[in-house]
Image 1 (cartoon, helix red, strand yellow):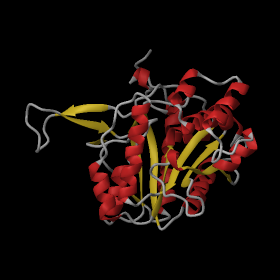
Image 2 (cartoon, helix red, strand yellow; image 1 turned 30 degrees about the horizontal axis):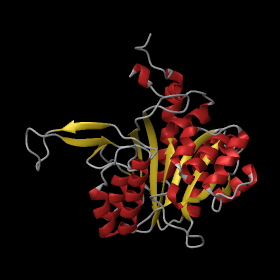
Image 3 (cartoon, one colour; image 1 turned 45 degrees about the vertical axis):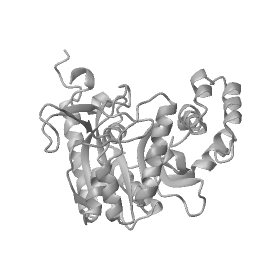
Image 4 (cartoon, helix red, strand yellow; image 1 turned 90 degrees about the horizontal axis):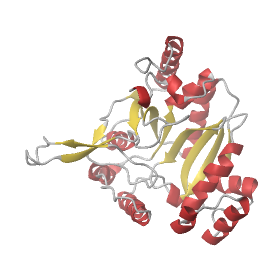
Length: 325
C-alpha cells in the first residue's frame, strides 16, 4: 500500500526526540535557529551536485510572459552565509534539501539537513563541536581524525597530493576497478574521489566516528586554502559505520577567489559534458560586503537517525520516500 508512511509511529516519536535534543544542544550554546528559503535564483556549480529547477513568472524585473529559473536548495549554505554577512551571530538550521540524484539505501532526493555556522571557529574547533553532538545523540566513543593525505597513504599506499593521473589509472587497473569513463575524464580529482568512495570509505569509521580533513583544493571549492599546505583546503568529513554523516569547511571569505573556484567548477562541468550553472550573484555580493571568519558544517539528519535507531534504509526514517511522495 503505497499511500502509507515508510516511518512507523514509534520511530516518528523517537525522531522527534532526537530533533528536540539537537535543538537543545544549540540552545545551550546560544546558537540561534534560523529559516531561509528553499527556492533561490542561484545554485551550486559543484560537478557532483544537480539541483531541481522550476519556473517562476512573477519577478519584478521580468516580463509577465517570461519565466525565470529558480532552484531548490541543495543545502541552505549560501543563504545562511548571507545572513552572517548581514550581521547575524552563530546560527543553525534544520532544513529540507533537494538533490536531483538516484534514491537508495542512504539517499533520497528530498532529505533533512542540519547546518550550522560558528563565527571565529577554525575547522578543528568545529570538528570538536561535531564530535560533542555525535556523542550526545549516538552515545558513541570519541571520534578520531586523519588527514586526507594520510588516509590514502595508509589504505592504498598512494600520496594523493603528488600522484599523477596515469599512476592512479594504473592502480585502478591493478585493482580491477578501472573504467573507460575514468580514463576519458583525464581528471585526477575525479579518480581520487572514485578511489576514496569505492575503496577507502568502506575501511573508515567502523567502530567509532572518523574525521577526514584537509582535502585537495579542487574538492573543496567553498573552503579556505590551508596556510600550512596550499595544495589542500580546510574541509572535513565524518564517517561512521559506513555512512558519510558530515561535510564541513573553514569558510572561504574572499569573493574574488570564490568566483574563480566557481568558474573552475563550471570548466570541469563542461569537460564532463554537463551544463554550466549560474553563479549565485547574491552570494558573491554578500562575500564582497564581508563574511566574518567562520566555519560551517552540514550533517545529514536522516542518516544520523538511522544510526541512532539502528535502521538500515533511509526511507524508514522519513515519513514518505520518493516512491510514496
